Structures are given as structure tokens and as C-alpha cells.
Length: 305
Ligand code: MTE
Image 1: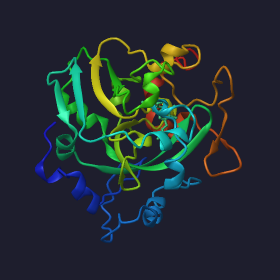
Image 2: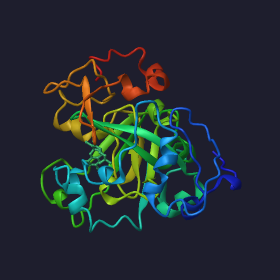
Image 3: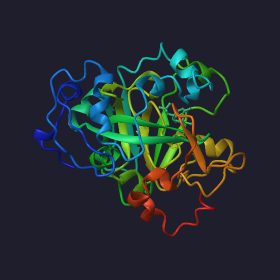
């Protein structure tokens, strides 16, 4: 894909010249915003709130950054915020390889210069039945895929988190098989909802949320949204994700949010929104049914969970 010069928005410039995009419509509304908007993320909440679906409210920055799953920094929800302080997300490279015309190792900052950053508000629902609504910044994964020019034999995309045990303490243990791996089918990866996120609430991604770049796949359980990505490979065969390799009966490849299929150890029909008391009914595909159900119309969702 050739990106016109006018579209190129370096991250720092972007931070001063915001564009807001409603997640479900994915249309730029081109709002012109007051200067200094990013000085304090909480000042932005009103503006982000304007682009939420009915019944949704943004989670606070403090909630999003202190209740996390990032097993490289241990498994307690408060652990990633505590133990990720020494992680260094700069400088950073992302290699793109496998079945592509243009394999390349990108310097993260150079990559951002080629790509237009967008704002989106997405829910993230985690498998243990909690969810948050997060104002992400990032770019569609499809933009990077188009730069790499996959071959027609590429059917899947595999993602890997960096392996850096000196900065990610749990990687020195057998807590999970490292590096953390995830995968998407090519059409899922190209879906316009699928985001490579580089920030939230107008800030660069905090370490505990997957700095400097992580996936956000809003219609799937949170574990699909792999953090601190350093390698993206195009493959013909289906990659085996970390959770699938550990517990294939509990975590399938698709991992679509589906309240009608129980996890073997708990119900998936309701969820607790962080910051709320009353549980909510979980929505099919996390509320993105209209945008994504066509991709699974021929799939038995009980078998391919
Ligand atoms: N990515 C890596 N590398 N390691 C992890 O342990 N946990 C996943 C996902 N990405 C995880 C990961 C899970 S289980 C969830 S629910 C989400 O990250 C949580 O993202 P958040 O902390 O930004 O809410």
C-alpha cells in the first residue's frame, strides 16, 4: 500500500493533533480539538465518552493501568504495574517475515512515521469474565500487512512477544512457555477492527499494557491481544497460541467472545465491568457481531471455540 505523504503522522505530532474515530463506524469525524488536550488524560474523557456505545462508560486510566494480565511480569492482576518498571520499550524493532514479498525488520519509530495513528474506543473482555472500555490509539494491522505484501499462500499471522528475561522477571521461570505466541486467520487480521495499539488515553502505551506495541482484537477474549510484539510471521499452517498449547480443551484458536459456550471451569454468560458492581450480560462477539459474524458463518462455534 502506498501511503500518501499527507497521511503520514509522526507520533509526537499526532499527540498534538488528534483525530477521533468511533470504533464501530471507523469513520474519521475530523473534530478539531483545543490545544493542549493531551496535557492531562482525564481532561479528554468527555471527548472520548462522546464516541461510546450506549451503556458503555470509559474505564479510568488508573483502572486500565493497575488491573492487568501480563504473565511476563507475574500472574497477579496488580503485578504488571509493580514489576514492569524496568522494562525498556525503546529502542524497539518488529520483524515481519515468513510468506511475504517484503520481509523487513522495522525500527519502531520509523514504522510510526509511515503510518497514520487513529483513536478508537474498544471494549476488552478477559476470559475470567471481567471487561474494560479503553480509548486506544494505534493503526489497523492491515496497514502493516499491506506494507509486507503477503503471498497468496499466507493463511495465518503469528505474533510473538519479546523474550527478555533480564527485564521480564517471570520469563526466568516456567510460568508459561516463552515467548508468548498468538495467531489470527488472515481475514481476522485484515478486519478493520483489528488494531496494533501504540497508546491509550493519549499516552504512549504503559509497560503493563504492552509497550510499545500490542494487538487489540475487540471481539475476542483478552488473551488474543498479545503485548509487546517483536515478531510477526505469515504462515500457511495455523500457529499454536500459548494458551492453546497449555490447555487445548480450555482455550481454542478462535477465542471469540461467545456467551453461549461455557469455559470448562466457569460460565461466560456474564461479566464484571471493572469499576461496576452489577454484572453485565456478555454480548456475542463482545458487541461487534455486525462487523465480524460473517467471518464465522460456516464454523461450528462449539467445536471451533
Ligand atoms: N500478552 C503477553 N505477552 N502476555 C500475557 O500474559 N495476557 C493477555 C493479553 N496479552 C498477556 C498478553 C490477557 S490474558 C489479557 S486479558 C490481556 O492481555 C490484558 O490486557 P490489559 O492488561 O491491557 O488489559
